[in-house]
Amino acid sequence: MASRSRRPPVALLLVGLATGLVFLGPFAYVVSRNVDLGTDFGSIIWSRDTWDPLRRSLWLGTTVAFSAAVVGTGLAWLTFRTDIPGRRVWRILAPLPLVIPSFVGASALIAAFATGGLAEEILSPIGITDLPDMRGFRGAWLVLTLFTYPYVYLPVAARMSSLSPSLEESARLLGRSPWTVFRTVVLPQSAGAIWAGALLVFLYTISDWGAVERMGYSTLTRDIYSDRVFDQARSMGLSLVLGVVALTVVMAERSLDRRRQRVEAVRTRDPMIVPLGRWKWPAMLAGGAVLANALLGPMAVFGFWSWRGLSADNPSPGLRTDVGDLVSPALNTAQTGLITAAVAIAVVLPVAWLTARYRSRVGGAANGMVVAGFALPGVVIALSLVFWVLQSPILGSWYQTLPLMIVAYVLHFGAQATRAAHVAVGAVPDRLGDAAATLGAGRVRRFLTVELPLMTPGLLAGAGLVMLSTMKELPATRLLSPPGFETLATEIWSAGERLNLAQESLAALVLIALSAVLTWAVVLRRSDVY
Image 1: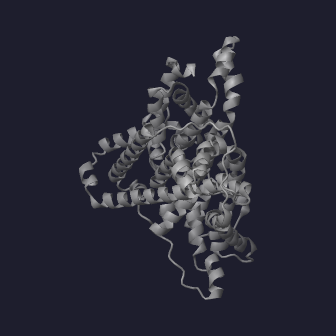
Image 2 (image 1 turned 45 degrees about the vertical axis):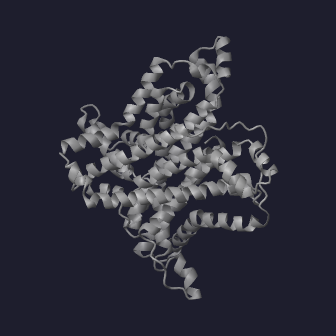
Image 3 (image 1 turned 60 degrees about the vertical axis):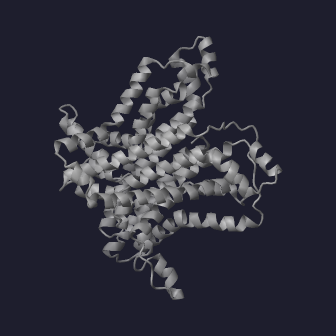
């Protein structure tokens, strides 16, 4: 523990501070543009046209965060702390909805309830022809809950698997029921992980554009995107409102986290397993319902429309498919995901080192700046980079190039890498570095031969999350991609705009398959370190 009280090197402090300031670039752009455009901020703040979408954004973010917290925590408890049959299979399947982009899930829901869709094929033979309209708040809430709950599931599962069973055993010896033990012992010890995951879900939801656009639910992000060309002053004013709201939420969560009682996560024995008894089959039914809607349902819908397109002899425009058109977007998707993941880990590692090793206030401030980048919509980050690049005489040639697009991804998703990197750095015992130092190993040699190998699994987990998010990103890709550069996300969106459900579904299946392979290889096998 000795090294944790040392003062951090000045060079490391400067690098961490510079990293945080770079992540504040999009906020600086929003403020600067509002000044340049002479935005009448007062009229925007007090306008009903602002409050209504803001209210809808906050309501959607709050309800999705709550439902995702309930689903993610419940599944984590079932799969890690109970004797539910097939626990290993549940643990593999539960995080997989993370690989499905929210707008792709929205497309699946629309396709399922479209005329001639899977829901009509299944329900019409039994006399049900009046299908519900899933657009609006109901559809947006359902889609975002189903595809964001893994943000809660993964950290809570890791937390529950690391808790000492002694307190639970004591409570059971005192005659407490399993539910009482969960409510009074397990839940309070997992509160930090639940809050952290719910915060990510909230920020993701209020900054999401694809799902709400597909569902026709008007939020602040949707207005920002639609006004970006014809009413830039309003678009920038709304961006500033969203950024301030997001920063306020992040600061409030950090304040609550500092007041929250810390519980050591040192586990010397296997966690206590709760027998479900007669609740075993209802528990399996509940978990199966979640995965059926979040994973199997979208796969079935996309498979249904893909099969119709591939098997059609004379396909109509809505059923026309071309597998060859997906090769280049798939390669571009993998390329941008891998590069962004590597760059993001390298960029946020100094910040994670400052916060985990030295508990530096500068590191804490830089960490807050990085997390804040996750709150702004991708379209705002993309617009800020376009502005800064076009204002610079040196970087002007970067416009619509791959490097600029990678920078936008890193600014947007760096928060996910920061959290995983923080855990990875904190997991390395100080005594190993101190022992290597006493043997004469220099700073670089200690890092490369002792600390980096121990951190590698955690860093790869963070890289996997960034890679996955990058592969799903749509607004920044549409605004910053080089001419002719298509990814699977843009291909899915373009096919949807052409009402070509077959090609859209086929591209979605390719994206899910590609994401699942990479998620399994990088994230799921190491989910215990996330």
